[in-house]
Length: 355
Picture 1 (cartoon, rainbow, N blue to C red):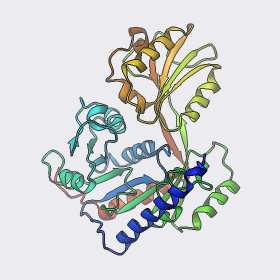
Picture 2 (cartoon, rainbow, N blue to C red; picture 1 turned 180 degrees about the vertical axis):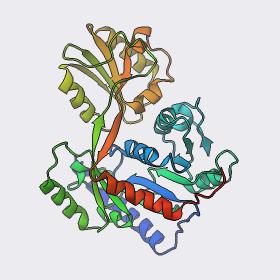
Picture 3 (tube, rainbow, N blue to C red; picture 1 turned 60 degrees about the vertical axis):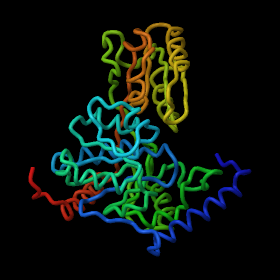
């Protein structure tokens, strides 16, 4: 949705973005390169393009051969500076997405630092992490003080055309920014995307770059308990299930549509992206769940679960019946995509580094 009365402010914002990029391109503002391979995953728009499942795909692809670390800003955390994630770290310590990654991949090195250059140096020098062989930067395409060795940009399928710069639209920078990318992934594609539709999408991207273009779609996996609840209560969504969906993400509509595909008994409590759940929110969740007939469950996303997991006040019946619906990505021509990543690592990583 375009807020047309904000278009003049988008012009001013765009002028600032173009000036900043020009200063980096001309070397007035300097980007720093590192000896360690750095893969940046980012997007042109704010929120909702599916960065985290794509980062997870990279982790699964690389972790058996390379010692990989993920470095994020740690959006909306309550700490400052560089923080290395521990198994006990909460979303308040490191942010919800880093907490999700640490929870899912226990041995993975996950760190947060708003200053990505400082964060990379810390990972390379810290005694706990200095054997790291590759770093994945989460949401760092606009963080131009780092010059990544490989840059992956995600574009949501429904926003290839017609979007505008902030604040009228959701673009952080113009589509011309794709020229800096090495790989483009069109995300959240419909399951039945045709070759003609792919060609149309490629044509829109090829106006700005000739770099490889891939297409990915979201795949929903099996339900997982958030609080180690009693799986005998209910662990699947059937036609008779009454589902309370609780989300604090940018675009919950695909999740809601997936649940509605399985049952028509759906109530959705929607909050803003990265929402900090308050005591009033928890009371609202308890009340909404208590009002549902049986069989019933509370369903949320992995990112929201990372925040809810450390919250007090949820009733015992809610905790026992709270499930997350994990997602992964299915990438069209995944073999070709994966080869680009591993070829870059094989060429640039120091695999002879001592373990």
